[in-house]
Amino acid sequence: MKFFSLFLLFLFYNGVSLSQDFSWKKVVISKNGSNEFYLDRKSIRSIGNYNYQWLMTNYLKEFDEVKSDISYTTIDCKRNRMQIVIWSEYSEHDAKGQITGHSLSTDDELEWANAKDGTIMSALIESSCKNKTFTFDENDVKNENKKTKRKSKYKEF
Image (cartoon, rainbow, N blue to C red; front, side):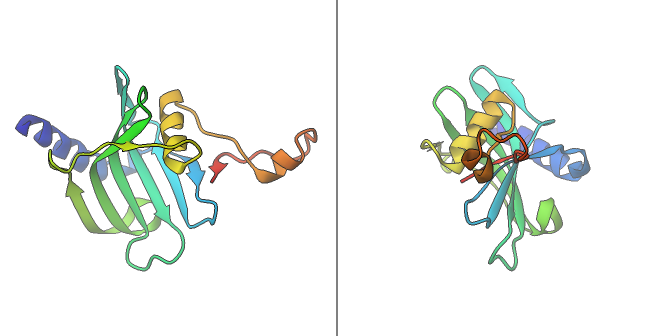
């Protein structure tokens, strides 16, 4: 397990130092517009039913000190669940600015969070497992037959 922890630390520091190499794709935003969530398409690694991938969250409302964070996640595509292995908080949006906090989960702290249908986590898991972004816009639902409206690049919850 010590080797695994060292490997994850290497991934974290290497990934953060190469942050300009991330390819963030917006997947979902919260209904009230307070948070937006991105997955890095370049970092995805799949082993069996598991995807390992960087996730970025921008906090858009009512957050003074922390404006964003990135997490290295393990996604279980078969069981529809996720765990955060490593994370870091930033003073600016898009994982920029000063690091305001960071953590590597210990064996005892690693817990799976099960996603319920229709939640942000389920959208992130589905996007990662299908390796695509969602398309959803309220105007498109109201005007399904009208092709003049342009669809949004992400699903809103």
